[in-house]
Image 1 (cartoon, helix red, strand yellow):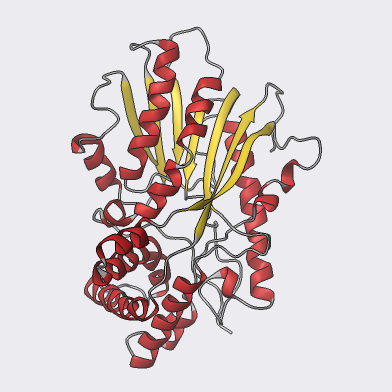
Image 2 (cartoon, rainbow, N blue to C red):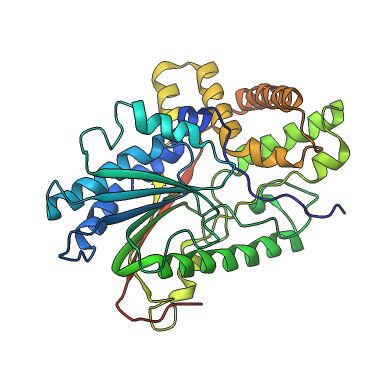
Length: 363
């Protein structure tokens, strides 16, 4: 069995994620009311020091604009137009930060457009490390990012996606998911000010761990096998292709809070799981354009997951080969999606955490 060597990767660059991550945007939009309420509940000092918002997992920025605007609007209603607001956008060092800055500079819906006292910043670092100083952040936001694990915990031979794996591999991912979730929370608790709030949005999972993405992931898994059979991928490359993601059921997300209702000075202020409508499928039912539908699904998968799968390509990576393989993958995936023709029946989970005033947090 091949040795595990793949880590989580960034989204597809050159603005591809901005163009094709509509599903993630829709999931985040379901949590905007929770974010608005969190902004209204954050404890704000009377001094004129800056208010700090941190986004953990910003990617290329387009899906950040509406949430940040909602948060800033809520805070402005409390402190007026002149108090400085710092917005930190965190993501991995390999993230396409150029596209993020382009959005902040020229997107018509950019949150900085009408507020000269908002100052955006970017941080290239994993959120499984400390990102900002202790007791610094008033309001945190993370949408469709904490599903990514810090690493691939074990070698995998039967599938790219955890809910479709068998045997010990699935158990290893579950344990990694538990450790990473608690580490994510403990680090954010240390960074939040007393009275701060953290809003986290994640893909939903049933109690058995199934997310609704399994049919799509089965298609993708079969496409990679086909590409290996064609000789486009080597046996070693195919064997190491796995997604370092884990869909945690709501009860597992809350396990750390079972004793005393606190974890690292955080308490759960709100949590819910809701079905996520599939806008791509709904558009297809309206216009009947099957080619457009499968193209949108395939582009979503490519921009979100293919870069992580292709971290397994032989090093050094030939950019032309990688681009060609991505195109071939997308073409084959569209063929399979066209033969199946069904929606993505996914869910979204929203949690709001409050940082209490107790001075001790997890080490």
